[in-house]
Length: 98
Picture: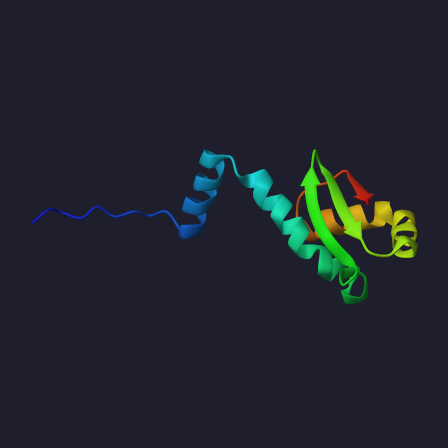
C-alpha cells in the first residue's frame, strides 16, 4: 500500500493560491461589488435597477427612472466609497448611470 502524505495547508490558503494562479481576483471583486449593490443602495433603489456591469473600473448601472438617475448622480462619490468599503478592496473608480 502507498504511504499517504499529509498536507498542512488550510483550505483558505489553497483557495487563495488558486485565485492568484488563475488571476481571477479582480473578477471576483467585481462580482462582489455587483452583488453588494442591493444592500448598499437599498431595496427601493435596487428594484429600479435593471442591469449592472463593470468595465475599466467603472460600474455601469441601468436605471428605469430618470429622476432616480439624477438623484444618484449627486451621491456618486459616496456610493463608490460605500461599495469599495463593502467589497473590502478598491474595485471601482466611477459609476455611470445609464
